[in-house]
Image (cartoon, rainbow, N blue to C red; front, side, top):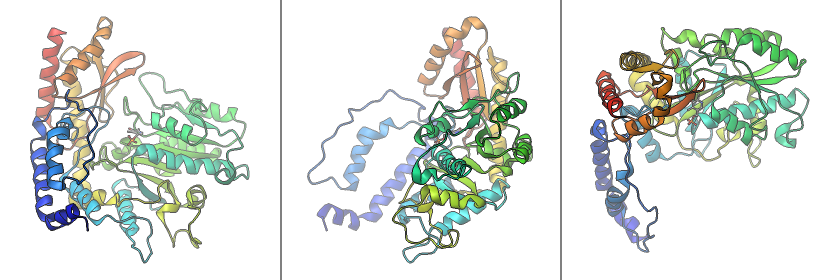
Length: 466
Ligand SMILES: *Cc1c(COP(=O)(O)O)cnc(C)c1O
């Protein structure tokens, strides 16, 4: 064995101890670590001939690279939709690296860790109160979950014409209907060869809504003259967390032939709360659902899952079957993840989620979800009292707002930039109904009212000088 590797092996306990301490130092100080910084590096360094060993590499990391780290898992990182990581999720994440399984099969001599993934998906179905009719798997994020789901939808579409698109390529125009798709669904259409411009936009409901107008949907369906289509619907749009009417869509499914996909990357977690589950009423009728775990479930990157109805498992295998795979037999009995999703080799991505669900249970996540929503409302009220205006009502955990008054539109960008520069909070710019705005998303388990107070104070101070 190489001498540096041998030295590290002999010192493993000390190395892990130091790493653990580093984790504790970062996470116990997270409230004080800035949400942004201007530190930069020249991203070039010499590859040592002899290597440094882990301890020296850690030293170099601490000197040069660690200062780049911002408190994105901290309580005031409200940009995008950014979750943190709970203690249990870090346990699972660390152990996923330690055990380093290649999670593929449920029945194999070389390891059956996919059973842990099955068990975790089953726990998630219980959390979200979804039926056992779905087969799920973990992917890196909601983008890949949308991709995986829409890839199966594409195969379904071909089948309506007796075609096998996975084998022979796309030979029909694929009809896609959607109202307010997340950009990652559009990216998926591009990756899937459907084309990022090849979709029909359904009108949204009049007024301050991003949800699809069911009457317009039905009109656009009728215009297809009986052709099949794929509907990409939303459980939680990013700007205003709006939800399509799933009961109405379920009714349309009784009349028309379509694949129904729901992107519920963060909004799907409304299902966990008695107060908000009405938003997703009827969603179990969908063919496929996307949910992110590195957002509201507060597990580390990268983690999301897809759910596809079991009845479509053959379409899924046709789409993703690894050409070198041995004879499959009964696809559910000899199940192997490498035949149902993009990756072949895969980390045991389920483990952080498994630990989280075991550690905090249904109540833990119900509290987390409801606390986030209460904080969004609390922040929104404070904004209204302080010369800001909401661009949309607060439906869930996202607050979309702007500076009050048309004349202040030009100040929105410099205001946000100056606010983010304080390092006390991070939010993202947005444009909503032709107005420049700012978006704050509440998903982190650590965030509390004191954080809202700190942010409002920074915002008030800035308003005076901008
Ligand atoms: C964040 C998000 C995505 C993309 O998720 P990634 O995890 O970044 O890949 C897709 N859809 C919605 C609604 C989202 O909020």
